[in-house]
Image 1 (tube, protein in one colour):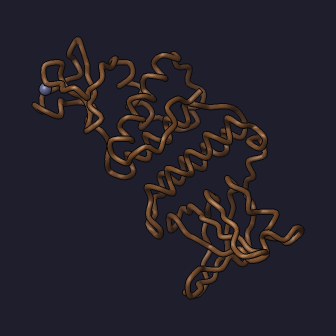
Image 2: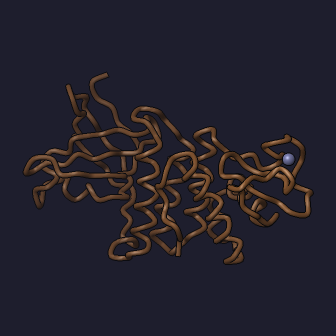
Length: 239
Ligand SMILES: [Zn+2]
């Protein structure tokens, strides 16, 4: 197959020579794909209009020796509502960084693709911290690294009915009596919200009303979990 097309989101771009750009796409069909967009740095060229971060479209690509070549892009969505908005730009940036760092080229993750697409579209309309957390929860699920949210990771007995819950960034819930120095005290509501993030359709998540403290604590749990597994990628706080 010399040429192919993918539904994708532009998650990274870098300049390449005087006139060209290399784009990293996250596609539904093939996961991460790197393409050369010839002439994309030349004002007025047809690819320069459509090489912004967060743009969603159908990309026509021809296989090349080292880099595949982007020949045509049909725009589907452009995140206009994010432009010039510092906080939204930052949130998108972190989502793209997570994908770029944790997903391999050529491995398809259709679930994360759909979640990212919805997050980009929704963020363009309004600020939405909850979508960011839902995105992160879905990434760990898609990578097969969901934390244990029912049983204690040390003694394997049920934890959820205990009066006091603890969460270990190493793997999930833990009993008060089994906890070590690294586990955090958590509330049942935070764990419930974590589960909801994985089960609820995205359209409902962006409308859900969540207590700010519950949100902040859930973010902290997810951030520490990410840090333990993948190193420091996420910001300390999502404001
Ligand atoms: Zn235990």
